[in-house]
Length: 299
Image 1 (tube, rainbow, N blue to C red):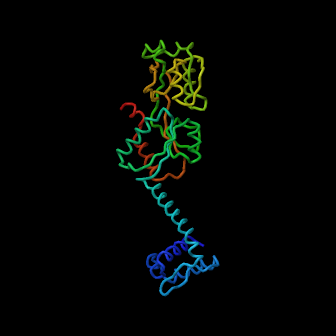
Image 2: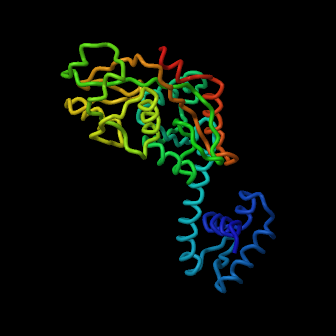
Image 3: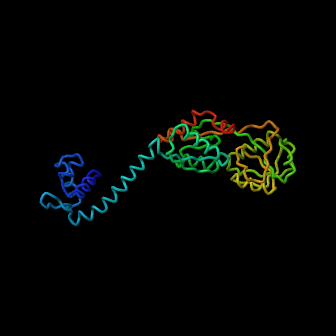
């Protein structure tokens, strides 16, 4: 049994006529007859009986038609969705990104729609931590990621900009009277920071080493929102990426006076994995746009 036989069977059942079915399918009537004959032989049942110039389904044929029609309809819908999926104008793109990049991601998509006109492309968002992003890429659940670079030979990436790091304090904290701070003066402060699962934790630890302080860390969190909540409650201060959305939070951002490393942000994908046209189009747009994160920060 093959797919072609099932399409032939369904068409004959609908038209109740071999000649008309052959014309619609653009095949010879003899080919159609042989195909149905082979199908009947394999199934060991008679599917059609002749009534004058027409044919009618037998009881077995009517029983089979119900399931063949359902199966072919599902297959046809799947093929239509696959066509949409790989269509560069209507395809689907899975994006994973760090929480601090949420607004940047929507900025990128807005620019993409504006410059390419591909407004029917469907985006699926996954805002999460670095380790989960890497796993999602490798497992094929994510097409592209906006993140810090990975030490993984199977992942390729391109730099799209860098983040400065800022200090945030509660507006009730004495430091809120300042606009900038020397980190070496904060040795006695309580710090809120990120869990070791987050790559930004490595970056923050590097900053502490650079300025030569051993921070007193009382809170660790996976997400920016938790860090912001603890700082807002004046339970500690925190180093965060400058792109973190502070809107509506009871915190103040202070610039850091010390010379500290910036944090590179990359767009990443799995090396040599097939990309649908829509994914490739979006990736190439981001790459051709240059340091898009730096452009975003200047807008």
